[in-house]
Image 1 (cartoon, rainbow, N blue to C red):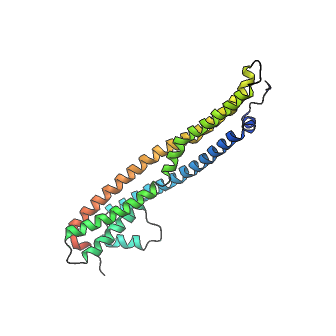
Image 2 (spheres, rainbow, N blue to C red):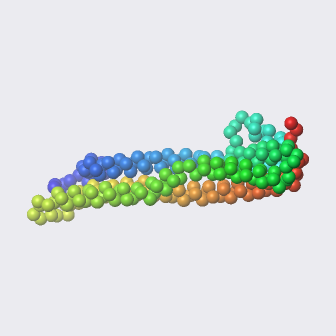
Length: 231
């Protein structure tokens, strides 16, 4: 090995073995995919939080529930998560209350089930791709370590026929190998940070949705049949 070996990042990557290059390529693809989901999830959660706040302000300003329901159903924009929960609950409540034989307890039980089903679908949507971020965060360092171990093995195999090994001879091979670990950490750290942050944000939204469902159920139960719109 030449002691004047080029130790620039690009040169080290180019001189790495085929397996190490494949490991680096895999890690870069995982990193790019995780960054795509990180930015996409940021926009989704910000939009959901903003629309939920807007809907809560409108809801608690005391509008007629029938008119609020019609404005959501006939609106041009896509309803937010909390609006969908309200729509599902109110629609089920109206349908059951029109069946005069139904007791209010049965009506409210069906209303809560409808809201709970919509709530779960919205939560599944918000949690989409979080498992991918968790996988990248947990697996990337080990994938990078695989490339590092393989690269170091090749570096020492190259010294097998050398009578006297020096630091200058072994350093390039080890440096090539350690790049894989560095790329693995580069992919893992943002994914772990984003996963933890988004998980907390989704928990807050989940608590907000559940609180709204309970308060909305109490309003419907107090109003009884007066909230039923005209056919």
